[in-house]
Image 1: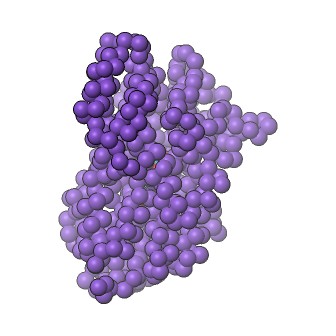
Image 2: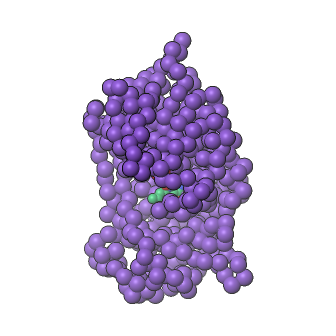
Length: 451
Ligand SMILES: Cc1cc2nc3c(=O)[nH]c(=O)nc-3n(C[C@H](O)[C@H](O)[C@H](O)COP(=O)(O)OP(=O)(O)OC[C@H]3O[C@@H](n4cnc5c(N)ncnc54)[C@H](O)[C@@H]3O)c2cc1C
């Protein structure tokens, strides 16, 4: 029998914090959310990074659980696949899935956050804006927040850290119990630019796609926004030979880089020089922890527990999956302690799997999407899926269109990669594929996938 009350304090009212507040408040929990920023519904959204995000099935499923999907999908833009812009050759769409039932969606971070906060409040969650967590007393169960010049002391039963990659709660927990924290910084960073609408207020390039300009060691991508703009993200090494952020330090250098390497993108970005000069270079990292919780006192989720590089577009999707999982454990487990332990045991292997796949996907996006061998393997993936729909599901589909655990998707992708490499070795078309051998490998190495 549960003897603990159903009260919870969430630190961070970003994407995961707001979603978890809905899931718990709907189930009758007493929820307090403390967010360091002001109320975005009043002050406008002060996001600071990645204006839009790719939403896939895992995140969408979590939004359905929260009753937030309809409001969010009203402003979503469908992305059917990657629209690849090679330096030489014809640009074109590479579909992510088999048809329009297998797509991802571009959504605006600020609008999404506002919708979730609104729904959380409508279910009774108390939202405390302009409250920055500073210190936690885990003995007396009091969290201290800074509100302008005041210290606000908030007694709590349990804290959930949804305060992002730079989590203060994580730092406070680590003062009580080592969490085994390790951050691996990527030696590449990013800068955001914008493609505005055309003279008639329409999209300047194909709207229903994620555009990629792959250039080997670096790349540009662009995601559509519902107001007919695209958010462009340039990924470059921080240092090293041209082009890196070190060697492309200002507007003149950026202009020269785009003239040489992204000539078809250049006319689409009229404010390139101004934006390049004004916008900061963002850092990217993978955060690993040995543990995510302290008994029943505090638990971390989303970026606070397992920040990842953005190249699979899964950070938010994974954080939303965390929220559904934690709400389920809190509902079923006999105690907070058991719930937090069960949550960590379930989700940590999956978070580590998607962190790894996200790192691998950077190389795929910047270097492989315009490579003939890679394209042949993608063609074979679809052919094998048609021959063995219950066993062979392409890597991207397992991650983006299904909800099987990420760890299972990683394992099956590794098995499938070997089958694809073996079957296409030395070939430049599917004509020469030894189908009997490929079928036998699928049957021998891949169990039917139960969804
Ligand atoms: C360039 C880029 C592109 C990305 N693209 C995608 C994508 O396409 N798809 C995808 O799924 N993911 C993407 N991500 C990842 C995604 O942004 C994160 O995984 C997601 O935002 C994590 O949500 P969160 O709620 O855990 O953290 P956050 O969204 O960072 O929210 C944390 C919240 O906590 C608040 N906070 C912080 N400190 C305190 C404190 N001390 N006290 C109180 N409040 C505090 C912050 O103000 C913030 O509101 C991308 C990330 C980047 C950097």
